[in-house]
Image 1 (spheres, rainbow, N blue to C red):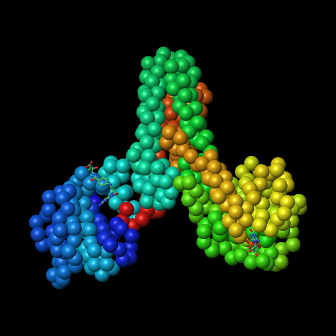
Image 2: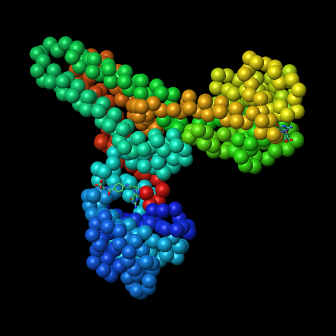
Image 3: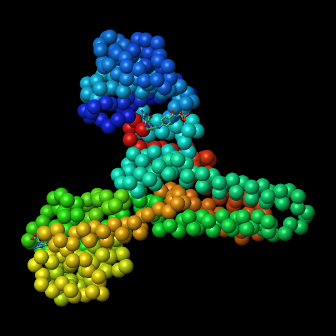
Length: 442
Ligand SMILES: Nc1nc2c(c(=O)[nH]1)N(C=O)[C@@H](CNc1ccc(C(=O)N[C@@H](CCC(=O)O)C(=O)O)cc1)CN2
Ligand SMILES: Nc1nc2c(ncn2[C@@H]2O[C@H](COP(=O)(O)OP(=O)(O)OP(=O)(O)O)[C@@H](O)[C@H]2O)c(=O)[nH]1
Ligand SMILES: [Mg+2]
């Protein structure tokens, strides 16, 4: 039914070891063609010479490993070639595989897609494989591992089972009722549906933490020109990411750096200094982008120049809300910094590094507050959120339905919405979109 696919599973380029993975019915014969020997026992690594089957040219002394269907990652016959990670070794092996009948290069995510299609993983677990590969911080890794272990899928499958039973109840009522049906859903089923609608609402009302943990918390640095925003970004990033100069209006484009704050992923953005009289239309556009980023950020760092105290830039003051950390910068130059305790400013010097640790701690606190996940699994994608919202709406409609037949149809829709998240029902149209974002070889 499936062709046999192959791809480099490790990162491209020169490396210590490179792994080429082959999956499908011809995986074993491909291995035999490269070694010219009988197949090794499954799940046993064997050191062997690989040769180009046409020329007999030596390709590598490799460690090879095979898995037999269905006991493999994809559920198919799988062969792994653990090669010396030289470019010519890898390209030689890939070219040799290309000449074998019934084999073709895998598309991004195709191994994992096959694992899904062979029932090894549900869709949330497959998505978690991609998330684990993309995980850059401990908290992201923990969330991905939990989902890959099936926690989210089990939650949704459990809900779906409850709906299946509720549906059976409603259908029995329809079958056995006398001519005069009482309207709507029977009293026995009502609390089941209402209860589930409530659980889904609570699950949805998580402040988007699972999704944010995947994407990273967006923090925008805002303030007047020359306040030291770019200097602060560089100090927090510990590299020279943004241009710093004594001229007001230096930064125009948004400069992003990725930080790991106590295991939480953060996308920190430097923005153009806010002022009324922009020097030109380029700076004007920069300020527009700065305001836009500030509006969309999860958290803002409002930077003020402490040397101008007690004057504080009004445009920056305007942006302060409960998601804002106030920073007084250039405290190495300022004399009076004990003003405006109402703003709880963090006193820093981007130049000397004073106060940066306190700022990092404050931002870590914000990140933990916005991103920390509890013991229950969180939804991690807009796709999950949309399906759950649809599910809940169908359940609420079922409760209001004037006829049991209509209620049954709404419960069916609700159940299908859940089934689409885990990939139990009609997902064909979704799969291309989901697996497109995977790495090649995964
Ligand atoms: N060399 C190598 N390392 C790897 C992978 C791989 O494919 N190859 N993985 C790939 O992502 C991950 C491990 N994931 C795997 C998941 C399932 C099976 C597997 O053989 N499953 C069988 C048998 C289960 C068992 O023995 O308990 C099965 O599910 O039936 C293998 C690897 C990470 N490390
Ligand atoms: N003494 C002192 N100077 C600083 C400090 N932080 C920044 N500066 C200086 O202030 C000037 C402006 O710094 P930038 O980081 O470019 O300021 P900015 O807020 O990014 O400015 P724009 O991009 O124009 O909005 C530069 O000359 C910096 O060296 C500080 O903590 N102490
Ligand atoms: Mg700047």
